[in-house]
Image 1 (cartoon, rainbow, N blue to C red):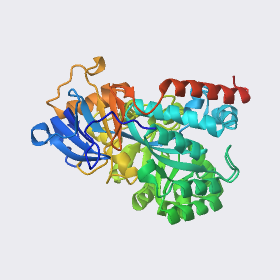
Image 2: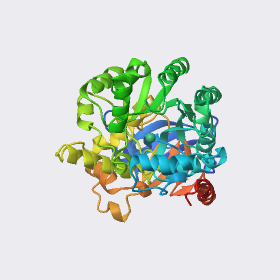
Image 3: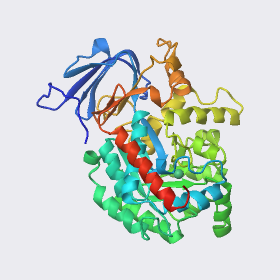
Image 4: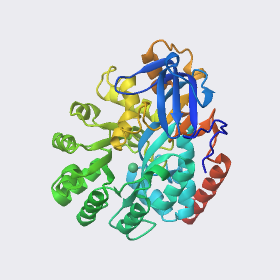
Length: 454
Ligand SMILES: [Zn+2]
C-alpha cells in the first residue's frame, strides 16, 4: 500500500503539492534549467514547473532545500527476482555460471520467493532513484504483485522459452494469461504488460512466430536479448546461416516494437536493420564486463541514430542494481573503446537514463522529463554530501558531471512516482525495508540449499 504524506490541503480536484527551493534539471528537449525552481503537482501529474518567481505555489508546500530535482531514472533491462542469486557464483565463465550455479538454483524458485526477490529489487531501485524499469522473467504475477506494492512503474515481460521455465512448461500460455490480467489496467496498477522471448537461441522459430502474433494482437513491447555473446552469434549462424538480428527479422519479430538488451556483436547490416525497424537498445555495461561478453558498439549505433538506453541487468550478473553507478562505468569504457575522452558528454549520458529510457518504452509522452502535463515521476538528489562537494550550481554542465561521475544511488533522497511520495529524505513510505531484507535472505537460503549450493 502506498501512503501519501498526510495532507490537510485536499481540494475538490485532488491532492496538490508545491515543491519549492528546487534546483531543477528538466531533461526536456530544450534542456530547461531552473537554479531556483518550483514544481506543482496535482494528483499524478505535473501542473506547473519553472523559476520560483514565475510560479504560484498552492496546496501542500514542501521545501526541497535546494536539492537537485530531475526525472526519475529509467532502467530498461533487469530480471526482477535476481537479488536471490546475488554473489552466489562470481568469477566464473558464462557457461559454468549458467549450468552449474544459476540454472540449478533457479529451478527451486517459488512464486512466494520470487515475490520477495522482486521486492528487494524494488527497494534497491527506489533507494537509488529508479522510478520505472523493464523486467523480463517468469513468475510474472508474483513480480507484478511486488512491483505494485512498491509503487514503482514496471514494464513486466513474462519470459518465453521453447523448453519451458521453472514456473511452467507452457510459457506462451503463462504470458497470455498475465497479459489478459493486466492489459488495460496500466493507469491504476502502473504495471505495463510486455512479452519477453528470452533470446534467439532459447526460442524456436515457432515460438518466435507465436510471440509476433501475441505482440501484434495486444499491441505489446517485445523485450528480448540480442547478440550478447559471440557464442550466440555462432550458434544461430550454424542453425540458420544468419546473424541473430537477421534471423529475428526474417521471422517478423523486428516488425514489432522491440527493446533489445546487450546488442554487442552486431555487424553493419544488423545495425541497418535496427535503424530501419527502430529497434531500441538497452546497454548493460556492467553485466557485459563481468561476464566478459564484449563492449557494445556505441559510436556506430549513435551514428545510425539508434536509440540507446541503459540497463543494470539482474543482480546475478551485476551484483549491484544502482543504475547511476553503471552509467559512469558505461560511459568510461566507451571513451576508452574509441580512445576519445570527449565521446559521450555527461548531459548525453544523463539522457540515456531519463528521456531515452522513456522513448525505449514508448512512454516519452508521459515520463522521462519534467514538463507540464507529464506524469509526476520525480527524484531529488542531496548534493550536500562529501562526494558532491564542491558544486558550482551556476554552471549547469557541472551538475550533469556531478550526477554522472561523482554521485551514486545513495545521493537520491526523495522519490515520487505517479504523484505519490515513495521516499522522503530517505525515509520509505511504501516499503518495509527490514521485512524485505529478512524474507529475501530466507528465500535465497532455501533455494540455494535445495540446489546443494549452500
Ligand atoms: Zn538479461
